Image 1 (cartoon, rainbow, N blue to C red):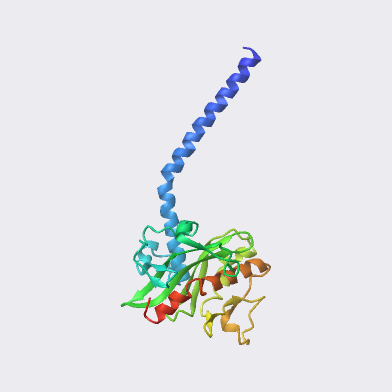
Image 2 (cartoon, rainbow, N blue to C red):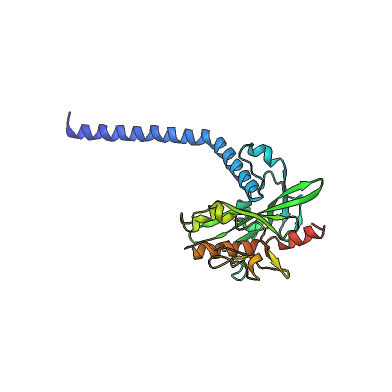
Length: 256
């Protein structure tokens, strides 16, 4: 066998192996996609439950999520809408679609999200028709990534129940400390609004409990100034006038 024939066979075998591997990987990806989607949805529900302080690891996520109703809010009016089906609404896609979102100018876009969707999902914990907790999706840019999460409020639409992120690319041990339960424990009980304005923010360092601002301040993330600033910005945007503030005001007035 000539050396030319040997090289041809090697290339042929390599190409055949690549084709076989590609088919195997593609088949596995297609077959696993339904399971991946189920796990993704379950993880999202678990994060909603955790933000609301309702998650119990000993029970199934699905059974616990039955206590939560999902609604859609028109962010342009601050009122519930039935024009969008919450079961099929893809909020992330809508936020990138010019027909379903609006571009934010530099002054508005403190969270660095570029566009705000017209509609948003909201999650409610109700008891005998009365709203006990309101869970709102939030997102905004930190140091390296867009952080996606939820903030939960008490029925007064002002007191924080919890905050958590389910997706981000911040630095482990620094900005990634947004996932640390010890840091997240600083949020429950904090107040959002003071004199009608969004006041909640991360402090530079630890909060002085004697400070008159203490009810509106959360400990900053050590060594992660830009991520801390990003968290402050995204919370203030989504709980502000261009986010959910009109909806929360309507909800308190019984006009949502």
